[in-house]
Image (tube, rainbow, N blue to C red; front, side, top):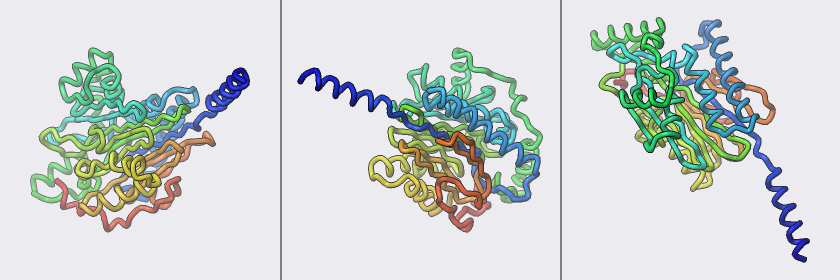
Length: 350
């Protein structure tokens, strides 16, 4: 009897161990004013970068690596591409500097790391991960964060590395409008868009989330947005992972990423409904806008946004990277974006 029970329990254990979760990786490169007449060469480059981020990140998952490896790998690809407002493509502050923020979080352990206001860190997401893994803290800022980066062997570069002509001209235009006391005509500047992020589910069923950004063009006084704030722009728990992109002040005020996950894990709301209610209803009702990517332990994906488009991509069981930009391109969320009339007026920024 004892032997039969042992064999039965062993067989049950083997059955459990043999059941592996299908890995999933979801990424975004920012939501905002994405025009149909985008330069074809730029659109091709953006789609290629999103595809590479998915492929490189998913390779980590297929190799049995944890979700956080996929998240940081995918985000590093986007940080190194000047077409995205993070890392190499970061926008300029009012003072003509690049100030970058990033965060990463593990869902099963609730460990998190973030950095804000760094100027010389080539890949802020890697420094955020170092904070998670090698410090007793959650958030480091400015010079202190860069001192920690030196200690951890994180790559530092001269600030000139982050200068791109496109971003510099965006600042010059914004400064002229400031001097004339005019609202920003460039909607991307006015509405504070520009972030990259990733969420991943690994073969062990664990989730992770990460976000990185150069902030907003013409920002002042050391402003920090939602991306590095755990619960606002980045959050993961055992059931849900979220990375946001949009007008950060509203994501902070609603604690948007955390709220989505609480609706999923505590209220048992379907992921797509929870994400859409926060991103497409709650935030616009306050005057904000943007988007998010979300993932749950069943591999369900949500990609709500209430703007003209969102750079986004996903890869799962089929092993094929899927990329979308515009609002009429299908994605797994099956959640149509809210009407653009809910978005905030450009003149309401600053």
